[in-house]
Image (tube, rainbow, N blue to C red):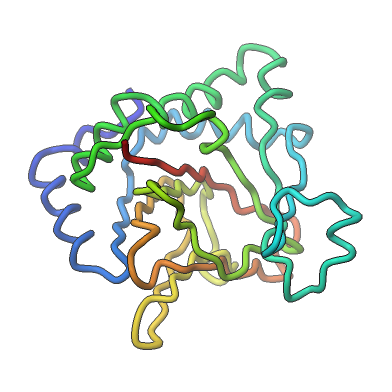
Length: 231
């Protein structure tokens, strides 16, 4: 079981729904949604250094190479981070399966049914050409960044983040910050087993990630990012 049953009772689902509808942007934060022992096993895999590759996006193009990146002005670069190479990791020993299994669970019927209940919309991969590319692990180091952007896309109903950072320092940076409303941004710390769900089309959902402080150059900020669509 990946999910913590205590967080799935009807009263909790109702509370999630109410919080979602009454926040700007429409978002909820759920701590301890997943089984922590299983996440611990996932982290053992993610901390292996060789299964990561740097990913770079500009405001005009995604997945740019180094030549394109160098030709892009600093203010037009919006993502530099590492992405987990599931193909490489999947070719290793069987211990990698739990990390892959979690990604598959997040795109499975059980979890998408939960999202459907919370957001009151039918979440499905029926019209998603390659669902698995929309769910993966990422990490940020002190030199990396995710600048202000929006995640809205036709039919996209839910964006999800799950943080995998044990004993995260309060002053380390790395908070997710929504633009919010009335010049009052909302910052959320990337604490272990914290799940953030938000509607990317809702007002104030534009967001960025606070940079990691330079004194934490030996640490990474880990998370799962996943996007979901309706029919």
